[in-house]
Length: 430
Ligand code: HEM
Image (cartoon, rainbow, N blue to C red; front, side, top):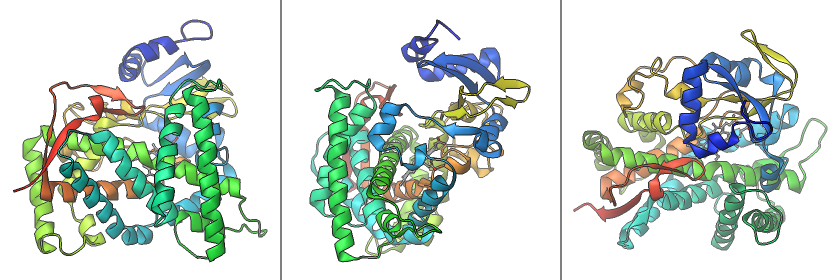
């Protein structure tokens, strides 16, 4: 448990967090305890234990985030909620991201992907792939939340989100001028922008199927609607959840494809066949085509496993819980460690080799959780994968790229991404 109060926080932050978890896992087995950021925690590195907390006994645990982070997203957002309110909002989010809705988004995602790629090539400069992917994922997030939004609003939201994000990942300090206090101000501005958008939407009486439309039209059994704060917190939350996650995985995909030439060729062959079938891109991609990209799809799954960008999640025990003979005391944090499961050689032989062919056979139950599991699992997972399929389609059929610099390594932003955001140069294929 380390030192009083600080526990093992310094150890966790002074070494690579993956090494911290992996060495404890090796030493103590699948269930072990620690003390980080002022909280006693039980860490669970086995698939059954993760399922126990997230699925079968989820009612004994609640989501838990530092108050400072909750304040920046908004306390009524899905992540922080439980029970009836959570399941009602979750249904709305899932409906706004249903396959029927995603089908309709395909041409819009395609046009965002094409314009992003064109801008990287036309600048003829070295691109920070992660930062560029963030712009792309943010624009798609905006599409799924607000539908087609006025560019002026979109640009303002993007600018404010950048500030919120810096504060979210910094030490919470209310002193004016600090990253956190700037983030609170930016959050207030986002709230104002959303109020304006809601006002316009109400005036126009549009019955849109996007998330804003779903939230505005919601009525519970007693005819109760959602207030504007609840709506705003959820819009902000979904946009937040969509951006860096998708961008980090896309950045890793480009890195892995760049480093594995044969695989890149196989992905190219698969995508060029579709591209030719669509009269060299004159016809738009269809939903059915995105369902028939087996090689690219396996590259995405293997990237999700290898990069495990969400290495773990947090819950808090609401009562004393006994798991497999271990007591998890009420109030303790519980952390299912996704990355440890994804990198366990028992489930994934040679876990540090990038090998998409391992997904020709379905993973063992509960051993593949890049999108979590249970009632809080990711409702955006299909949208995230669709973005990746579409971006890769346009990338490999029309462009080539080269990573600049020989330094390899990982930076935490806060999700793991290749060092310096993967600087790269892009060219159009001859
Ligand atoms: C590769 C991209 C993504 C990854 C790896 C990812 C991963 C996850 C994970 C692991 C969770 C569960 C966290 C927990 O149990 O504590 C989660 C929750 C969530 N994700 Fe994603 N996500 C991605 C993209 C997206 C996108 C594109 C959206 C929305 C458009 C989204 C919206 C959400 C929301 C709203 C939740 C909270 C669900 C709830 O509490 O019920 N995510 N995500």
